[in-house]
Image (cartoon, rainbow, N blue to C red; front, side, top):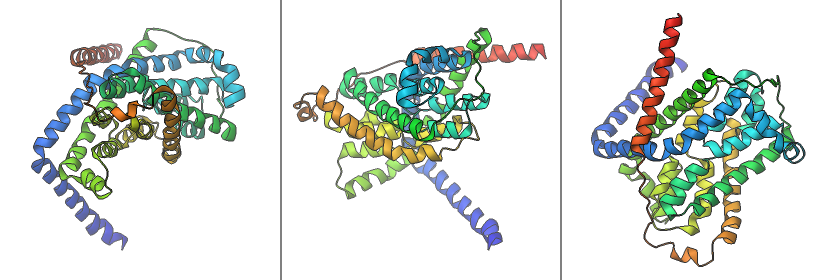
Length: 361
C-alpha cells in the first residue's frame, strides 16, 4: 500500500496540482497581474516604511545588549506582575511595537545565541506577535478612517491581549534566561548587521506578500470567499475580513467608515493571517515549533475583540457607528521612491560587505 501511494497516488496528485496551478495562471492572468502589482505597491507604500526602521532598531538593541539596559526601568513590573526576566519582558514590548514577524525573529536570535531555551522561544512566540502602531496607524487608522485614533484602538486591543498572554505564560511556565552576557558591545559591524538583517526580513516579508497575492487572486476570481459569505448571508465587509484572514493587508479594502467593525478588525489583526504565519515559518529558527503559537491565536483574537469592545465604547461616541456607511475616507500614500532608495541602499551595503569579505579571503 505504501509503495502504491509513493509510486502512483503521490505523483498523480502532484500532476493534478501542477496542472491546476498552471491553468489558474493561464485563465486568471489579468487578475494575477493586478494582484501582484497591487501587492508590490502595498509593500513599497505601507510595509517597508512602517516596519523597516523599528525592525532595524529592535535587532540593534538585541545585538548590542542595550535591551538589558532598556529593561531596567520595567524591572518591578516584569518581576512582580509578569514573573518574566527583564530581558524577555523587553522582547515582548519590542515585538509588540515592531511588527508581526519581528517577535519570532528576535526570539530566534536569542535562541541561536543560547540565551533562551527552545521551550521558552516557543512559549513567548504566543505573545510576541503584533502589527505595531506604525502599521495600524497607516493601514487602518489613516487608510480606513482618516484618523490615527482608530488605528491606535486596534493596536491597544491587540497588544493588550498579548500582554495578558505574557502574564499568563510568566505565571504558569516561569520562563528563564540562560547564559547571560552582561557586556555591552557596539561597533560598525553590529550596525551594518542590524541594517542588513532588517533588510533581509523586509525582503522575506514582501516576497511572501507578493507570492501570496497570486493564490488570493485566483480565490477571488473563482468567487470562493464571496460564495461562502453569501451562503451565510454576510455583507461585503465581512467578505473583506475573511480575505484578510488570508493576507492582513486586505483589511484596507473595507468600505465605508466602519467604527462598528473595530472589534472584528482587532480580532482579525490579532490572528494576522495565513501569509504572516508563513512569514514566521521562514524567519524562525528551524528548531522552534509554531504549534504553541497557532494554538494561542483563537484565544488571543477573542481577547482582542473583547478589549476593543471596551476601549471603543469609552473613546468613540455612541453616535459614530451610525455613520459607518458614509463614503470611504482614503488617504493616498506614495512612498514608492523612498522605499526604492532604501532597497538600493541595502543592496549596496550588502554588496560592499560581500566584496570586503572576498578581499580578505
